[in-house]
Length: 143
Image 1 (spheres, helix red, strand yellow):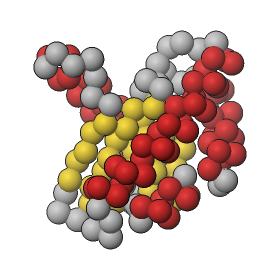
Image 2: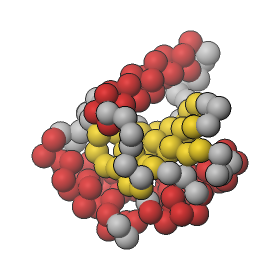
Image 3: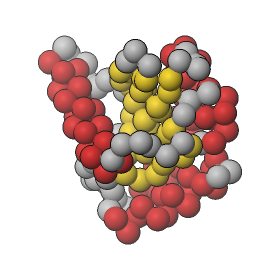
Image 4: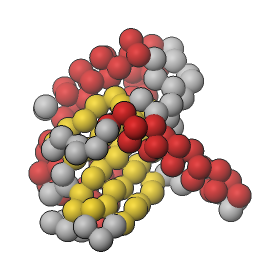
C-alpha cells in the first residue's frame, strides 16, 4: 500500500471490514478516532448498498466524498472489506481512481484466498483473522 500511496500522493489508506472494524492503516496517522471512522465507513458503505438496490443496481463498488481540502475514495474489496483512500489537493480523483483499480484487484485476490483458506463466508472479519490479514497485506505491498 505504501507504493500505492506514493504513486497517487494520497495521504492514508485504511482497510475496514464490513462490520466496522479497522483492519489496517498505512501512511499518515489519522488525526481522528480511527475506531469511530471505521464504524462510520462501514455504515456509509452499507447505506449506499441499499441506495444502489433502490436504483436497481446490485451494489455500488466504489464511493467518493469530496471536501474543500480533504477527500476520500472508498472501494469494495471481495465484498468483505473496504479500502478507504484519504487524499487532499496534492492529487486528483482521476489519479486515485486510475491507481486504485490494480490495488483493489490485488487486495481482492489476497482476501478471497484468505477467506477461502479460513472457510469464512460471512462479511464480518473475525478478530483472530485480523493478524493474518495484516501480515498478508504487508507481504503483498512490501510494507
